[in-house]
Length: 316
Image (tube, rainbow, N blue to C red):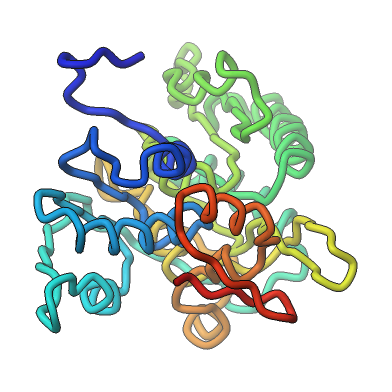
């Protein structure tokens, strides 16, 4: 929905920009390109950063901005040293989030799904008004937990209606139609007569980690897992595996709680595991993907690619 001479800003996914670079290697229609959430290291973002670095060397008029809240900034600053050894400019913008209190479990949880349900109900019973964001791994798990929390919340209300308010569960994953995804922005349910205020629980995949901000979220429940796409070159098949998140992802998840007022993040793993077991950054998608399509896209974009025996490739 763009109009030449009128459109000033264009929002698109990294995959769409990569497609445009295939048809227009010089990206002549753009004077400034911003890559946000670069720390996620998606396949399209990584390929784009390589293309844009060489493009910036050819186009002195092109402004390139790489943004992220949890990025290893010095590594990227060194990589984008376009003119000689002079590193790229680095700007640190102070965050506007409210303080967040982080809680860990005393012992590792044997079943993170059960622990997540227990934590949500504990927050609903004991904490101040405010909505809850619970991160889970996939559609089936989210729908199952939604049903269980609804049943438990109904039992609580029936047993003591004056102690807890109404609770609604809203699932969020990429398979939902847009109308149902919009439900996450609905206000929480109103309190009954003489009863405490209601609460909204959004149960989401890591789509809510960086892609959008939901107003009213005060409590985040983080089990520490996400689904990641992994390619097995021996059987030439891609699969989704439940894997521990990185420290950068854990910080992003906790940050969801402090957008509107001071919040709390409940991590369902020990502080020791956070410090010693989790990786600093998310494993780049380019290291766990089938690169056949990527190589073809690079060739289409006019980049010389030499593939060696064993599947490695070098961009020339």
